[in-house]
Image (tube, rainbow, N blue to C red; front, side, top):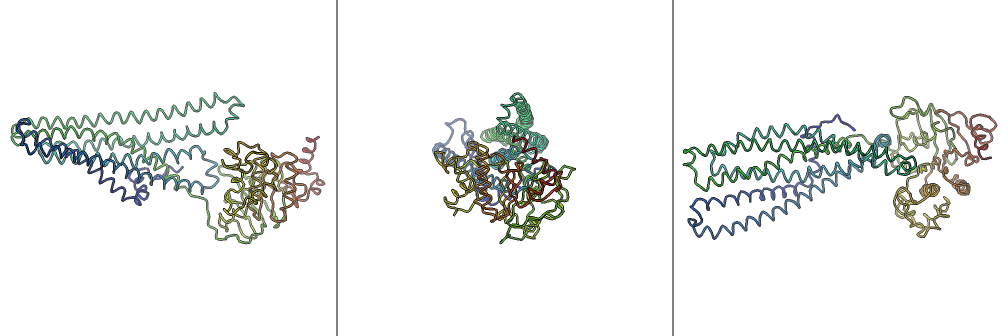
Length: 585
């Protein structure tokens, strides 16, 4: 993530304002209600003056006793209504802010390049959408509620004190700058600890995600001890950062309270002078000292508020750093209408980020529209890298890749990918019905008959019809309810339903049994005249009838031709074929 951007509270909060601005009416209503709520405290306290200016209740005028109960009821009612209004309005504003931010982050993550997802775990990214956004909610609601309410309380109580005795109130004006400087001093510490706390939260999420995702490997290889220790270390690190946060907050609160108590002691001392006492009534003295004691509570709340606010600002910075990262480049203008599916590589070279070795080295070949071409070779020879460049999962390659004579980067990403179907060896299914998985992201007008036809052509209807709910059977998370071969057939059906001019099968038949593989081969024979097909296969029996076979070795094309021609050349393809034939004996 980008850690070089401005990390100051002011800059971060300034970036948060555009998310709040559309809902400023709710914010203004909440702030007004908070101010009214805080003013009722001063109003209730001011009722002590008419009671204390006499000597006991017997000296109070009867008229005062009649309206004071009504005033108390009115003020308490106003306090309750304003408190409800402020909480509701702030919850509405914060909910809207977090919702819009989460949506923007979600959309931004969908637009990030494959390189980004390769270098960031899904657990850490999930933490940003959940934990970090909740911290933002705290900064934009709870923190703001406490800030406005307690600030308004302090101001209203200070006004009440000044109104009754401006001489005694001067002491508070001297203490205020000292308190402000103390709060500022601990803010930086809070920010640093908050950043460490969020990083440790991400580590906990990553550790948990890896254990849950790889639970079979953990059990099979006896990795419980390793995972237990990893999680214990990360959770202990998080505990330490949390404890530091509490420690700093716990130390700052009594420190500021000591400063406030010194101001209170100064007021008590100043009140002992006869010249001051002569100007004060009993009611004024009672109100001033009561207001001074009441200021301690909102002052304490504001001090503890700093920790939560800094956590929120740290979370905001984390999210803004993510949003500042560039999305996939999409500068093309072509819509791809009428594409036939001709693919051509011209002197294409490519290497992955942080790798010095090239995965592809000066690769050139052409696949005419409607032809079926196979890519074979040893593992790591560059086959999957080559087909991942066609949908522009990576677009920083050297050379040119043409689709129907136009460079891939001249097409709009959405239009380009609408013309390509990809089935990889690592099939990903959604926790939905088999029908929904086959028709994923297809137009809503796709009929049930079309879905069933695609399943039949992928030889998936054989096992689907045996299930109690048929196409309505739930696949489970990532297709956990299905076998590997069944998942691949569902993925192939999904690709066939899309009906694109270019079909890419990256080891799509690796988990199929011989009978299913034969059915898929028959299906491919039916559709290969309708689209261009690129097949990556280690099982050479699936590609013998291809129009051309390209043999890859160390990122280069070492051989190309038909099946029989390559066998006669006694090169790499012939050796691979002999090894597979011998293994089947």
